[in-house]
Image (cartoon, rainbow, N blue to C red; front, side, top):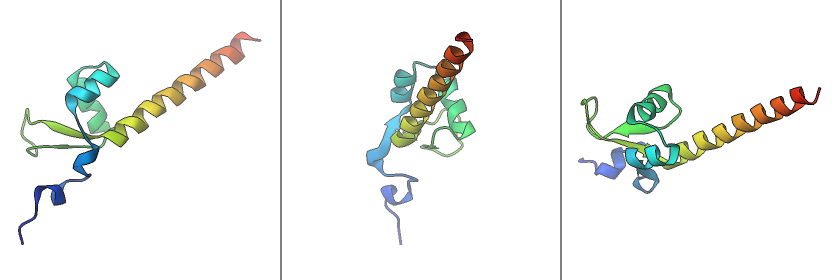
Length: 87
């Protein structure tokens, strides 16, 4: 049996976004996005596995979760600052 491309992907194509989309949303470098992928903060796959320079595809929902975690961390920092400054 020959598998179709979409059957081999770790997540549906409809959830796929490109490196440029992530960079624009996070306003960061390609190296920063690669670090997020390698650390497990973003779910992604490399189009041509383990080939230097090969494009990456990122799961959109993993980016949403990462951005939400940034908002949560920022909120905790703000509340910690406000409680320490009110003393």
